[in-house]
Image (cartoon, rainbow, N blue to C red; front, side):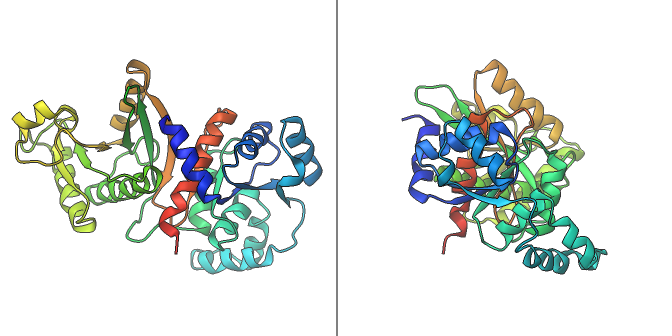
Length: 331
C-alpha cells in the first residue's frame, strides 16, 4: 500500500464532513465524484444547486448523494454574520459589512467550519491564497499557542520503501523571526502527527551545524530551537543543523554525535521562505519526490488552500489531508 493509499484508508475510516466553497469549478466536482466513488469523506458544496448536481453528474458522481448549500440564498447566514462581527468588530467591521461578507462562499465555508457545522474546508481552485487565508483568519483564527499561519509540503520520496519528509515553511511566511520560526515548527509537527499518525522528529536547518558558523540567521534558528523545546517538550527537536546532519546518520555521528535527532529528522524547518521554496522544488524535480501541498497549518480548525492549477487528483489529496487534520479536534 502506497503512502497516499494509506492516508485514504484512514480518511475513509473517519468519514469527515468537508465543505468545498467553489461549487462552480469543474475540477472540484470531478474530485468530489472520485471522493464519492472511494467513500473518502462526506462533501458539502457551496454553489447553485442545479449547476452543482448537473456538473457532478457529468463528472460521473452521484448528484443525489451530495449536500449543496445554495450560494444565492441568505437563509441561515445570520449566525455566520454574528460570529464574524463578534470576531472582527474590534478591528472596525460593522454588522452590515459582516452580513455582506458572509455571502462570499469562502467566508461562508470558513464560518461553517468555525461553527462546527463541517469539519474542514478546501478552497483555492478559483481564488487566491490571500483570499482563502483571509477568510480562515477572520472566521477561525490561529490554533492554541500559535500566532502565525504557515504551510508545509509533504515530500513523498521514491522507494522502496517510500519515505515522507515534511518541509516547512515553503509558501507563506517570507522572513520568520525566531519566535515565528518556533511557531511554524510547532504547527508543522502537529499537522504531521495528525496526517501521518507518526511521531515528528524536528530539525531546524541552517548553513551552520551546532556553532560551526555564526550570523544573524543562525542566531534566529537557535532562538527558535530553544522556544520550540519550551512549547513542545515531548517532541524531539534539535539544531541548528545543516541538511546532511539532519538526514544522514553517518554525517550526524560526526557532526552531532550527542543528538538523537541528527540523521533521523522527518520535519525540516527552513530558515526562510526562500530556502523552503527552493528546497522543496529541487527535491521534487531532481529527486523525483511527490510534493503534496501546500498544507495550511496553525489554524484552530483545518482549512486548506489549493493551487489555482490544481488537478482533480490534487484536490482529492488535499481533501484527504484536511480530513485527517481534524484528528486532533476529536473529543
